[in-house]
Structure formats: structure tokens, C-alpha cells
Image (cartoon, rainbow, N blue to C red; front, side, top):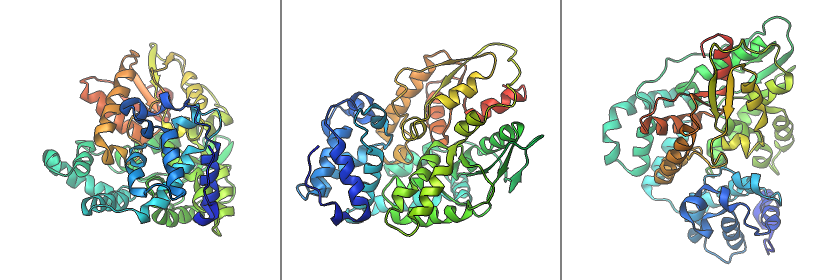
Amino acid sequence: MQHEIDSQRYGPQGESMADAVGSCVHCGFCLPTCPTYVTMGEEMDSPRGRIFLIKEVLEDKLELELALPYIDNCLGCQACQTACPSGVQYGGLITLFRAHAEPRRERTPMDRLQRAVVLKTLPNPRRFRLAARAGRFAKPLADRLPTGLGAMLRLLPDELPKAAPLPTIFPAEGNRRARVALLAGCAQRVLAPDINWATLRVLARHGVETVIPPSQGCCGALAMHTGAAAAAKPLARRNLDAFDVGGIDAVVTNAAGCGSGMKEYPLLFKGDPEQGRAERFAERVLDVAVFLDGLGLRAAPAPLPAPMTVAYHDACHLAHAQGVRGAPRRLLESIDGVRLVEPPEWELCCGSAGTYNIERPDVAAELGERKARNLFETGAALIATGNIGCMTQVQSHIDALGQQLPVLHTMQVLDRAYTHTL
């Protein structure tokens, strides 16, 4: 797409935005994979439509406020990148443009309050646990509250699992084959602490020692992907220091959104003194399924007592943002007795998308129900995926359909297969 963007005017990230705009050829391959275009049918709610709007704003040909409703509708799922034959880096573009727009836009007092609650609560496990406990009592009032706050309450589970603090080191079983550092996550530690423990047990079984740096914190993806770059940077700096651990083979994550965010640190720090460190750090970040698949299983799980059909749900920030689809499937198929099935419209987002199901609950609900129906219609007895946000969204919509269909993390499925509890 031809443009007249003065990239130098927009600082170190200006060139990245201009390059992304310039690489779009307006072909339309992105349209059928974009969840907002599929559900809304508006050109400006498609990736190429948003790229045009961004170009116009950066060229001073369109007021920012006129473009923002369409920019805000974007889930940031990056399905368009998977479909794009021209290699448009749309994920980086939308992240950078939102960071550019945030300090220049006007928000209502309620929007500012909701945003502050999310950005101050979700990245902090202690605060989130306290808020979730209190929120259960306010759940009956969800329909009377402003849309975003009500959506947050409806997403809360009726019961929270007990806290399960992690050790600083989890040793390998037998001869050590590798040593990694694990990002423990934020909301995941509150909503599903078993995911981390399952990850530790599976890695240990295959000879991997895991370090859990105690000084780590939120990866910053939540802030980064909603335009709050100023809030994301100190969180990212903290992790650059925390994961500066000697003798590790990789920094592994078991949440697709976190892994994607950490791989974007070079973009976040472009032009800053930390850029070099961020680039070296991002090169070491791997999803746990990718790491384990690359290392190779020491031994496959014992055959299941009866065949089981498993539907794998591709988390957008794993399949689209990181280009990872094969590794988790190969791990699941290593379980003798598992038959893996593909749901229709695998590329469409489930509607979770970080805080999207809070900010745009109506669209998120439509996408969530669509995803839940597609997964249920596979006839699977179990759904596996690699992201806590997807798990929460899909499970809530499966439950809303009145179906008994568990949603587990890939590492939980493997862990249960090894312990004969699947």
C-alpha cells in the first residue's frame, strides 16, 4: 500500500509501522480469517481496512477519534498474519499504533476506571485473588453494573482453587537433559495453578530441571496489547533482570499470550538502551510445547485404557502470533489411544483475546459461543489448548451450552496420561 507516512516523526517505532502499512497489497486474503469481519461484515473492521485507517491517521488525513472505534474492535488475534501472502506484520502494527494512540485519545471516566482496575489487578496474582474472592459476592449484580465491570464478574469462577506456591527449582528426574526457566504467569496462577505444576512434572519426567525465578512478574503482554506501553516497559524490564539466569537452555512459557508478549520485547524497547537485551531474551523464549517437542520425549505415556477423542483448540497467540501448530499436536498424539480432531474454523479467535471479553463482551460472547459449538460438534470427550484465557472463555461457553466437556492445557493432558488419570 502506497503511503506518505513520515516515519521519523513517530520515533523509533515509526519505521516498523510504515513498513507494515507499505507491505499490505490489499488482496483480501485476511478477510475470511478475521473474526470481526466475519461477524460484522464491515470493511473497516477487517485488517486491510484498519491498515488503511492507520495510514490515514499517520498521514494526518483522518482524525484519530474517527478511526478508534474500528481499531478498538480488533482482537489482535493475528489470524490475518497466518493468511497473509505478503507477510504483513499486522500484530506489531496494531500494538504500536495502540501505544501511539493511547496518550492522545479521550476516554470517559468509567473507561479509565475499568482500564485501571484491569491493569492494576490482573497482572498481580495477590490482588487478583482478593478481587476474585470479593467479586463472587457481587456476581448477582453483574447485569446492573457498567458493561465492562459486569463482564468481569460474569467471567469469575464460582470457586477458586487453593493457591499452590511454586518452588524456585524443580529438579529433573534421572539424568538431566536440559535446564529451563519458567514464566509462572499471573491470572493463571490464580485460576488454574495446576497448569504450572503439570508443566513442572512433565518437564522433570523428561529430564528437564526448571528454575522459577522468584523476582519475576507479569510479562506485560496485557498492557502492551492494549496500548499501555508505559505500563508494560517496567514489567518487561523486571523480567529481563529476573530471567538473566546462567546455564539455562530456554525461557519457557505455558501461556500463549505471555509467550507472544515476551517475544515482542524487542518491538517494545526499539530505540531504547534495553533493545539489545530484549532481542537476546526474545530469542530464548519458547512455548513449553515447542521446547519439549524439540527435546524429544524420553518415553511416551502408557496406552490409554480406552480410546479418547481430543479436540485441539489453537490459541491465537500460539498459532498465529508464534506460528506454532505442530508441536502441541505431536505431543498429544504421542499418547497411545488419543485421536486428535480439528474443529471447523480453527483459525477464528474464541473471543478472549486478553481483555477483549471485558472491553467488547457482546462480540466476545458471539465468538465464544461459535467456538464452543464448533468444538462440541467434533464429538470430542476433551478439549486441549495452550492458553489460560482461551481455557476460561471456551469452558464458560461450553458450560453455557449445557454440555459436560472439560477444557485442559496440553501439559495437563500429558501429565494425566503419565499418571494414568486421564
